[in-house]
Length: 367
Image 1: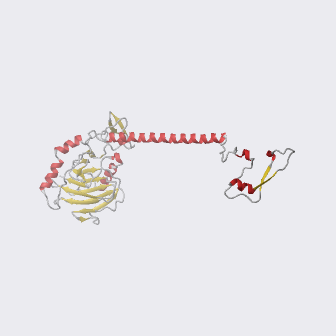
Image 2: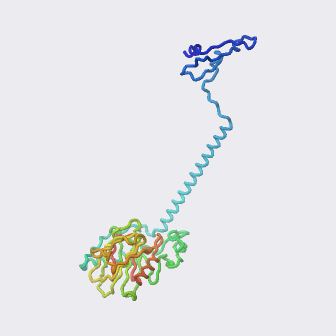
Image 3: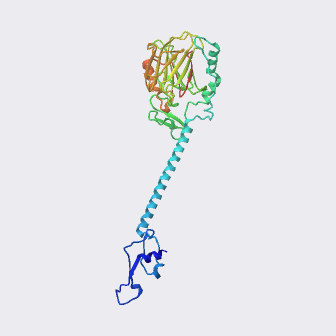
């Protein structure tokens, strides 16, 4: 069909360029009528050679172009290989460091995280419930907690070649015989815990018990055997917790006196990284002279309730201060020494310090 169209479209004349009248010397031309729309191109040739023309035959690229394409593919392969190797090495290194950090920061006993769940004591305001007080005193002085201090919470931190938990410069730590030793100013050489004046922080040496959702938490504390603060004629009790992940958390604090004695007025220091809402219940017969609330950020937004009544606006009783805080163990960005310095400057010598990394309920025995 298309041949008939071509015959109607093409015209040719035998132009005699030479005396030889061979058909191969014929000259063809395309008429002005044009080609049909479905025909894109026409190869002008003799019919006997028409089948020898390859239709749409791809032209191979020159050798230089093929070499350039091969080089580009090779370069891409090398770059992908290098990036993949670096990613594998980085992930492997991070995994090894994470495992080592977990091993050296956890105590030797594998049952460290098996906290003991004990129902919280319920001490009503103004009512000296002797059963609850005796229960708290028994819990605090029980053989279970005494054994827990030795087995669940070790005073030293194990290490291997390097003391990873205390790598900060302020500790000046080194690993000796598989145990971390700190030579930094203000830290105990063997336990790496803070020391400030007569307050030497020890694990689970607190006269307060910390709970997190009814589970007993590890505490850090110190005691002073001075009967009263000679400058301000009051005893200073510090309760500190970090609770870094959320602001304005409610924290309950029950202050009890298991054995009735004639004590001077007490000063409560409530410290937390974020400002918290403290709900304090004080047993009748205990005279609270002042409250010092300390937090690192937004220190002025925390609220305090004493025996069900808010005391935030009673300036004579409450003082708020912004300061760095710590809960007794400074390996996780804590600043216990700075906190103790602030308390010593504003409230006087510290009678008791109790700290925990996280807690939403405290019981403090001032006996």
